[in-house]
Image (cartoon, rainbow, N blue to C red):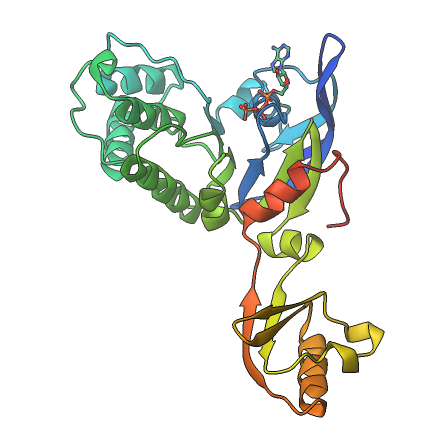
Length: 306
Ligand SMILES: Nc1ncnc2c1ncn2[C@@H]1O[C@H](COP(=O)(O)OP(=O)(O)OP(=O)(O)O)[C@@H](O)[C@H]1O
């Protein structure tokens, strides 16, 4: 069942359209990635879902409520891209203060905060936040998004600008939160992270969704898997048009036939053998999300058939 539904969501700033009619649904327990180049409209979308900015048009329903309603805020944890923290407070005091704002009983809050900080491996919890490193501050901000034990988490660039070790902790922790049953919507520039933890993705460009689906579906819609058939001879002359190789090149005395599916692999093999040669190797090449992203982000912003 969808826990988050967005229909034709739009945001205009003056005459400028930052988000142009987004529609998608997110199932309970999913990790949903929002990716796109700078200025694509990711933060604007996430802020509308979190109820921090008012849409110009369209609707969003999060956990059965309109963003911004108090009943929805209790079920939501939002991690902004940049989270101003109270620098004079210690992490513990700060998190207990926020838990109190959500009316979390003190003993429950203490346990919850301790659990989050343990899992995030935050050291020096009694240090003033202002004296903490950037990575430690980010962990405190993540723990803050969890003080009310929300069902839905919206994380805007949770690990941007952090060292690889801290980044890894945060990404692994996000994965664990999903295993705990939380629904997570997050934006990230690091597509490896997106690829490693997201169930489904939307790619935005210029305010529009230009691709969507599981990574598999997005791959299929944007080139998909290629098969590289290496052979002693060129089989392309013996192929009919239907299974024709996309590309034939010579490499180190071998002929490489690049084809799109297994039927074409078989056709190339038959053609090579008919020409008196043999297939020496077959390799599968799958485009990374990064390669797909570069392709769709450089095209005019129109959604393809995914
Ligand atoms: N308050 C605002 N007033 C006017 N324009 C804005 C405002 N906030 C965002 N924009 C514009 O809307 C567009 C989308 O911005 P947004 O921050 O949503 O992009 P983004 O995809 O999150 O980018 P980034 O990856 O750089 O964070 C940008 O062109 C931005 O300049």
